[in-house]
Length: 314
Image (tube, rainbow, N blue to C red; front, top):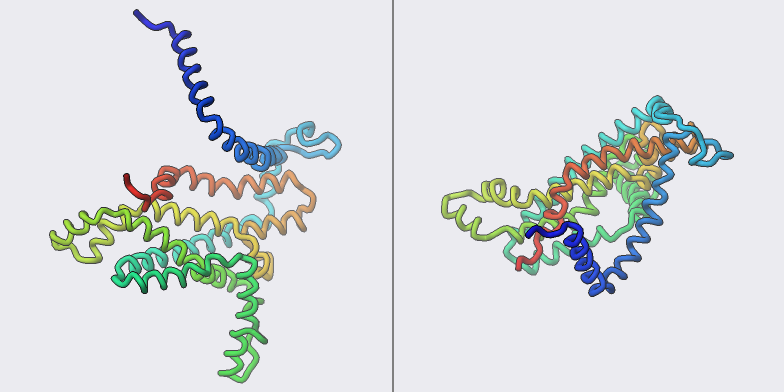
């Protein structure tokens, strides 16, 4: 005899309700972060509707007439748009090219070390810079690269007898300062993530490959890197997102609008060229967020695997 769909649905709902009631403490704990996310993340995002509005303060956000894509057109036609996009893409690719392979190579070298004592010391020393905040990092760079009293200026004067040129005034050097200081700061942290992923590689695969005559380089390229690919992809995505949204370094080291990145460019756009034009600013915010969202959803399948690599297998 066939089951009544309505009765079956009611029975399923009762079972779900009983499961929720039996674990009400867990759902109560979950309530606070969900409310926080809704109130402080999703509700403010509703303001992005300004991007499609011809905003009138008297009419309010929802009462203002629709403007279609006019605000997007104003942003694309702004002289800053091609400049900031070019600078941001350049720095992002530069950062990926440098910050991506160095931690992997460092992790492989640490993983191959036999002395556990030395390995832990090296890991600790390289991991410490990760705890330095961005604001402190900017201050350190100013102190070290000051052309008068900094380490750079002192060494230059010692060996040449002349006053050092002010390299911090060169906006073109920003990308090199930013990328290589980021390498120094994040290599230890990224290497630990990679080491955790490498520890999850089945050693029997190594042994079988070595029996078959595989060389160390082949072990890395044929076994280690393919199995650690989810972690590598996730870490690379995190580097790209961080660089794409970088603001503090850019606003301190950029000396002119021709060197601005996206975050600094948006700030300058709102402060000068289109001051008070919140609809254009909202449109710009949407435009600069789209590439990151596309990358995130394209690589989402690697997220869970990459973030749990190195976990204990039961």
